[in-house]
Amino acid sequence: MRGAPLHTRIPVLLYHAVMAEPPDWIAEFTVEPGEFARQLDAVVAAGRSPVTVGTLVGHLTAGTPLPPRPVVLTFDDGFADLAGPTAEALASRSLPATAYLTTGAITPGLPCLLPPAPMMTLAQVPDLERYGIEIGAHTATHPQLDTLPPGALRRELRDPKALLEDLVGHEVRHLAYPHGYNSPAVRRAARAAGYASAVAVRHALSSATDEPFRIARLIVRRSHTAADVERWMEGRGARAAPYPDSLPTVGWRAYRRARALVKGREFAG
Image (tube, rainbow, N blue to C red; front, side, top):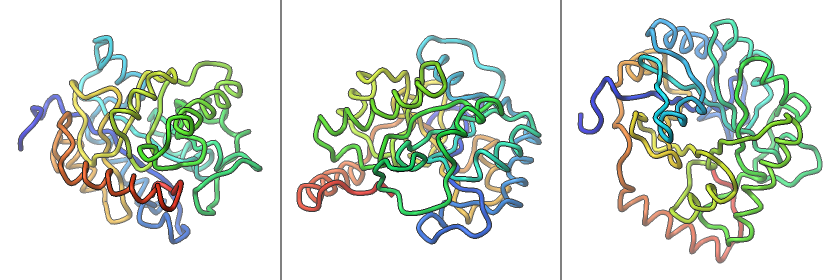
């Protein structure tokens, strides 16, 4: 397999909802609770050192040493299970994680492009930190960031950061791009908004030389099993970042930008 050597590859797993009966729109990215437990057990059995995104970024940006064979668990959006059984499952195995929250989805009265689903509440955000879960932002409304005009892009990045910081009482330094959609302009805007890092998707392993503003993650789908997680823990089963965007990725971005000019802002999903 090309790319980073096996010993430098870092699995950064991307979860969404953990529930038995998810809404249709998120079902593909939902893990059943029993399978989730088996996957967490596979992470523990692999002997990897669980760290937050903040720890990984400290290495990528400042050279702070990482523990042997790190692994990162991340959760996007803020589904209802996160602040309850999911956080408890992580804590019972001493697994830290990073949660990227879409503030419009967890705050009544705020606009959001995410379809309806059981979500946690803004008031539960401090509870996540008590479970050892690092808080990151996942925009205000979950749009395709790389199709937005500059003013709208700045608001999507800055508003949720400020809201979450007011709630938890400290800086929120990490961002997740909805559906991984980003571009050089989006990455520059994320840095200008005060973030120290941003995660993409890429369905690839990260590495000790990954890019801080498009950290690669492995998206966990309902078809994945503990065996897939075991393979990722070995540094296998996916390519390793960093690597440049492919021509199809660049072309898909151009198509979505053109479509946004006609249809307006769209849900990233």
